[in-house]
Length: 193
Figure 1: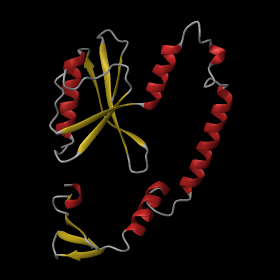
Figure 2: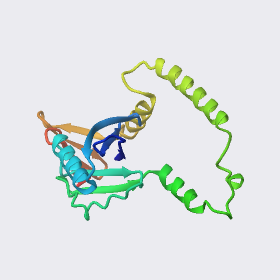
Figure 3: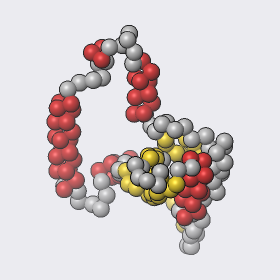
Protein backbone atom coordinates (compact mmCIF):
# COMPACT_ATOMS: atom_id res chain seq x y z
CA UNK A 1 0.00 0.00 0.00
CA UNK A 2 1.20 3.49 -0.73
CA UNK A 3 -0.14 6.95 -1.20
CA UNK A 4 1.10 10.39 -2.12
CA UNK A 5 -0.30 13.90 -2.18
CA UNK A 6 -0.86 15.42 -5.62
CA UNK A 7 0.04 19.01 -6.34
CA UNK A 8 -3.24 20.11 -7.85
CA UNK A 9 -5.81 22.76 -6.94
CA UNK A 10 -8.13 20.10 -5.49
CA UNK A 11 -5.68 18.89 -2.80
CA UNK A 12 -6.16 15.25 -3.70
CA UNK A 13 -4.26 12.11 -2.79
CA UNK A 14 -3.18 9.17 -4.97
CA UNK A 15 -3.69 5.77 -3.27
CA UNK A 16 -2.18 2.60 -4.72
CA UNK A 17 -2.05 -1.08 -3.93
CA UNK A 18 0.32 -3.50 -5.66
CA UNK A 19 0.76 -7.26 -5.55
CA UNK A 20 3.53 -9.76 -6.11
CA UNK A 21 3.10 -12.61 -8.57
CA UNK A 22 4.49 -16.14 -8.35
CA UNK A 23 7.71 -15.03 -10.04
CA UNK A 24 8.23 -12.33 -7.36
CA UNK A 25 7.40 -9.52 -9.81
CA UNK A 26 5.38 -6.51 -8.64
CA UNK A 27 2.22 -5.44 -10.48
CA UNK A 28 -0.47 -2.80 -9.76
CA UNK A 29 -3.79 -4.06 -8.41
CA UNK A 30 -5.77 -0.86 -7.97
CA UNK A 31 -5.30 2.89 -7.69
CA UNK A 32 -7.54 5.83 -7.02
CA UNK A 33 -7.36 9.61 -6.67
CA UNK A 34 -9.34 10.80 -3.65
CA UNK A 35 -10.00 13.96 -1.72
CA UNK A 36 -7.50 14.28 1.10
CA UNK A 37 -9.22 12.83 4.13
CA UNK A 38 -6.77 10.27 5.39
CA UNK A 39 -8.97 8.03 7.56
CA UNK A 40 -12.07 7.92 5.39
CA UNK A 41 -10.16 7.66 2.11
CA UNK A 42 -8.06 4.68 3.20
CA UNK A 43 -11.04 2.96 4.82
CA UNK A 44 -13.12 3.40 1.67
CA UNK A 45 -10.28 2.29 -0.64
CA UNK A 46 -9.37 -0.85 1.31
CA UNK A 47 -12.97 -1.91 1.91
CA UNK A 48 -13.79 -1.36 -1.77
CA UNK A 49 -10.68 -3.33 -2.75
CA UNK A 50 -11.66 -6.17 -0.42
CA UNK A 51 -15.15 -6.36 -1.91
CA UNK A 52 -14.04 -5.96 -5.51
CA UNK A 53 -11.36 -8.67 -5.28
CA UNK A 54 -13.72 -10.97 -3.34
CA UNK A 55 -11.10 -11.59 -0.67
CA UNK A 56 -12.07 -14.64 1.34
CA UNK A 57 -12.16 -15.23 5.09
CA UNK A 58 -9.98 -18.32 5.17
CA UNK A 59 -6.80 -16.63 3.93
CA UNK A 60 -4.31 -14.44 5.76
CA UNK A 61 -3.40 -11.25 3.92
CA UNK A 62 -0.25 -9.25 4.47
CA UNK A 63 -0.23 -5.50 3.95
CA UNK A 64 3.18 -3.90 3.51
CA UNK A 65 3.44 -0.18 4.17
CA UNK A 66 6.34 2.20 3.62
CA UNK A 67 5.86 3.55 7.16
CA UNK A 68 5.65 7.17 6.00
CA UNK A 69 2.21 7.31 7.53
CA UNK A 70 1.68 4.42 9.88
CA UNK A 71 -1.73 2.93 9.21
CA UNK A 72 -3.32 1.84 12.45
CA UNK A 73 -5.96 -0.49 11.06
CA UNK A 74 -8.07 -0.78 14.18
CA UNK A 75 -7.88 2.92 15.06
CA UNK A 76 -8.94 3.94 11.57
CA UNK A 77 -11.75 1.42 11.48
CA UNK A 78 -10.19 -0.42 8.56
CA UNK A 79 -11.74 -3.72 9.52
CA UNK A 80 -12.10 -5.28 6.13
CA UNK A 81 -14.29 -8.16 5.07
CA UNK A 82 -11.65 -10.77 5.85
CA UNK A 83 -10.56 -12.02 9.23
CA UNK A 84 -6.81 -11.84 9.33
CA UNK A 85 -4.62 -8.99 8.15
CA UNK A 86 -0.94 -8.79 9.00
CA UNK A 87 0.90 -5.54 8.43
CA UNK A 88 4.59 -5.33 7.66
CA UNK A 89 6.93 -2.44 7.01
CA UNK A 90 8.95 -2.23 3.81
CA UNK A 91 12.55 -3.17 4.66
CA UNK A 92 13.98 -0.33 2.60
CA UNK A 93 11.86 2.20 4.49
CA UNK A 94 12.78 0.76 7.89
CA UNK A 95 16.46 1.00 6.97
CA UNK A 96 16.04 4.56 5.63
CA UNK A 97 14.17 5.63 8.75
CA UNK A 98 16.96 4.25 10.97
CA UNK A 99 19.60 6.14 9.00
CA UNK A 100 17.46 9.27 9.15
CA UNK A 101 17.37 9.13 12.94
CA UNK A 102 21.17 8.91 13.08
CA UNK A 103 21.64 11.93 10.83
CA UNK A 104 23.18 14.61 13.00
CA UNK A 105 26.45 16.29 13.82
CA UNK A 106 27.97 13.11 15.24
CA UNK A 107 27.21 11.20 12.03
CA UNK A 108 28.79 12.93 9.08
CA UNK A 109 27.85 12.13 5.51
CA UNK A 110 31.31 10.61 4.86
CA UNK A 111 30.92 8.12 7.70
CA UNK A 112 28.01 6.29 6.05
CA UNK A 113 29.41 3.17 4.43
CA UNK A 114 26.13 2.61 2.63
CA UNK A 115 26.58 5.72 0.49
CA UNK A 116 28.63 4.94 -2.61
CA UNK A 117 29.09 6.40 -6.04
CA UNK A 118 25.81 5.97 -7.90
CA UNK A 119 27.47 5.12 -11.21
CA UNK A 120 28.81 1.84 -9.78
CA UNK A 121 25.35 0.88 -8.59
CA UNK A 122 23.70 1.94 -11.85
CA UNK A 123 26.24 -0.06 -13.87
CA UNK A 124 25.48 -3.17 -11.80
CA UNK A 125 21.75 -2.62 -12.32
CA UNK A 126 22.14 -2.24 -16.10
CA UNK A 127 24.20 -5.43 -16.23
CA UNK A 128 21.60 -7.24 -14.15
CA UNK A 129 18.76 -6.04 -16.40
CA UNK A 130 20.56 -7.32 -19.52
CA UNK A 131 21.32 -10.68 -17.85
CA UNK A 132 17.69 -11.05 -16.76
CA UNK A 133 16.48 -10.18 -20.26
CA UNK A 134 18.73 -12.87 -21.79
CA UNK A 135 17.51 -15.37 -19.21
CA UNK A 136 13.86 -14.43 -19.81
CA UNK A 137 14.22 -14.79 -23.59
CA UNK A 138 15.53 -18.33 -23.04
CA UNK A 139 12.41 -19.56 -21.21
CA UNK A 140 10.90 -22.67 -22.72
CA UNK A 141 7.78 -22.65 -20.53
CA UNK A 142 5.03 -20.12 -19.85
CA UNK A 143 6.52 -19.42 -16.43
CA UNK A 144 9.80 -18.18 -15.06
CA UNK A 145 12.77 -20.02 -13.60
CA UNK A 146 11.82 -19.20 -9.99
CA UNK A 147 8.43 -20.84 -10.47
CA UNK A 148 10.09 -23.82 -12.20
CA UNK A 149 12.57 -24.23 -9.32
CA UNK A 150 9.70 -24.17 -6.78
CA UNK A 151 7.72 -26.64 -8.89
CA UNK A 152 10.71 -28.99 -9.22
CA UNK A 153 11.38 -28.86 -5.47
CA UNK A 154 7.71 -29.64 -4.73
CA UNK A 155 7.77 -32.44 -7.30
CA UNK A 156 10.72 -34.10 -5.51
CA UNK A 157 8.89 -33.85 -2.17
CA UNK A 158 5.73 -35.41 -3.62
CA UNK A 159 7.28 -38.62 -5.02
CA UNK A 160 6.53 -40.64 -1.88
CA UNK A 161 2.91 -39.43 -1.55
CA UNK A 162 0.02 -41.60 -2.74
CA UNK A 163 -2.95 -39.85 -4.36
CA UNK A 164 -6.41 -41.45 -4.04
CA UNK A 165 -9.00 -39.72 -6.22
CA UNK A 166 -12.75 -39.96 -5.49
CA UNK A 167 -13.70 -39.43 -9.15
CA UNK A 168 -15.11 -35.94 -8.71
CA UNK A 169 -13.48 -33.00 -6.97
CA UNK A 170 -11.93 -34.48 -3.84
CA UNK A 171 -8.84 -36.55 -3.22
CA UNK A 172 -6.82 -37.94 -0.37
CA UNK A 173 -3.04 -37.76 -0.03
CA UNK A 174 -1.16 -40.33 2.03
CA UNK A 175 2.46 -40.74 3.04
CA UNK A 176 3.15 -43.13 5.90
CA UNK A 177 1.01 -42.02 8.85
CA UNK A 178 0.22 -38.60 7.32
CA UNK A 179 -3.08 -38.15 5.54
CA UNK A 180 -4.72 -35.03 4.06
CA UNK A 181 -8.01 -34.42 2.28
CA UNK A 182 -8.15 -31.91 -0.58
CA UNK A 183 -11.41 -30.42 -1.91
CA UNK A 184 -10.70 -28.73 -5.26
CA UNK A 185 -14.16 -27.19 -5.64
CA UNK A 186 -13.84 -25.33 -2.32
CA UNK A 187 -10.04 -24.95 -2.63
CA UNK A 188 -9.36 -26.27 0.85
CA UNK A 189 -6.95 -28.80 2.27
CA UNK A 190 -7.02 -30.41 5.71
CA UNK A 191 -3.31 -29.54 6.11
CA UNK A 192 -4.31 -25.85 6.57
CA UNK A 193 -6.85 -26.54 9.31
